[in-house]
Length: 209
Image (cartoon, rainbow, N blue to C red; front, side, top):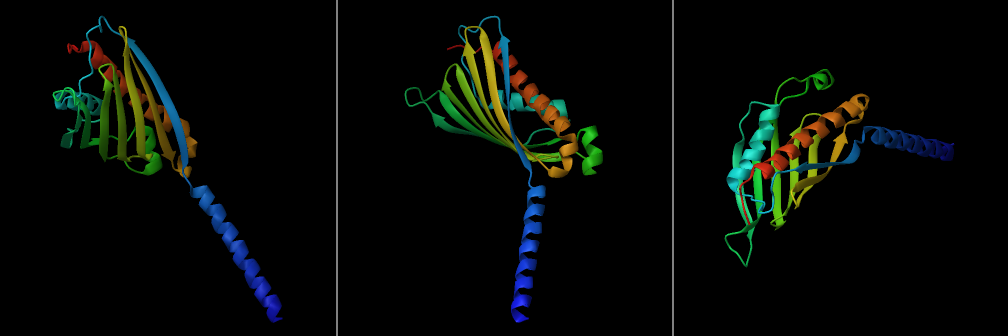
């Protein structure tokens, strides 16, 4: 009888562990890795060189934020992380952090029961490989629905064309799978808008090598 009791107890523990494991699987967020490729042809980029001054980076971020809210950029911090040893005046890498807010899209509001603007935190590391190649690593925290996102972007000038290749990952909560495609499309559009701003800034730039 005692052996039977212990056996039953052990089986109950195994069943409970199995149930908990199953629940854990259901609550895990799905991570999605996606990419965006865009290209723009400009009038003349023969003397173009990427510039990553404080004003230029700020303007790009401000333009993107203005598309999604009326909030200003807060706690802006710009740090020159690395300079070219052969040309100290040429900054190769910068680190940027700031806060802003984004409005919750209308079709999300009923799912998360929130229609207020969310305070987001952005961290950027921008590097110039050379005058014609710029990379950005961007991390955005406290986003509605997807919580956080990391983007790796490469901008490259060839002839009179400037191109962008962006990869990013999303973690979508299991309870929002029903609108997963809507979330992905919204995020993709938002990233594409920022990329367009960067590409357009290249065409409008008067900077020379």
